Image (spheres, one colour):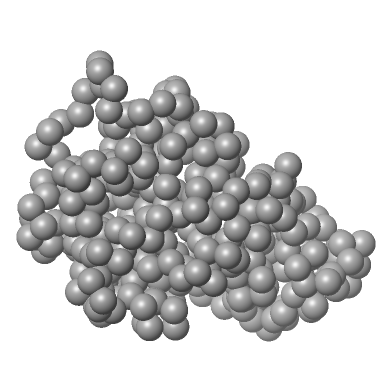
Length: 342
């Protein structure tokens, strides 16, 4: 079974998810404590501008408008979102489609109710003066790929009818130095990571997203336990979470610098974030969140076409599931109530 590249594995490389919790069963069984006055959101990674919509929503009081006392909990390399949501320690978390599909296959009763990153940030980066602009441009080139990215690249080649033997794969780590040194012609990256690192050093790059060439897996999806969807009180909270989060992201898209500043000075203050780096990252995030699809239907919405594409990608990676098992669009629909903005 192919293991798709998650944001956590990309950024943390071999760091293990060590939450140490069972991912089966109900989070609402006897003996599981959960603060009744708090609505907990578990982030998939450290508190940074990637979650600026949530930060703005909290800072602006949008969650309070929905009657929620929201607690946003940072993640990191040693945090696994699925077991935290299953245990009931968080009502909602953020994780990738493939991670949740795998958790369901292992018995976790989880559902995805919304997708933040409608365009996956996995990218092919090259130097601006020697651009690799399309998948076909990789033919005959040296392509730096991390070990845990090999499967996704093989799947990407298959989607684009590229013979893997026609591309020289060079094992690399996560530091883009081999690209700068000319040891490779292209480098597997996240659009919001290595290109920003190099931009801060004055090195211009060319980037294309795998999502624009078939690999359209969603990332940073809102994940919940299916029991929450069936419970009237918790479902009402989830609708409020979606409404507040969408309002926050609408503001973030209009003013990304505000989101970057909140990440640096408030929500991610303990992580020593760089303001300029966060602002550049915010600029690159916006077109991944605000797409033609979300402009038509609303942020975080999950179209049938998008769901079908994600199911197909999972199947190609050996993860068999259905749209009905993995996705629930009813919370988003209730939150928007026929509108496209909130």
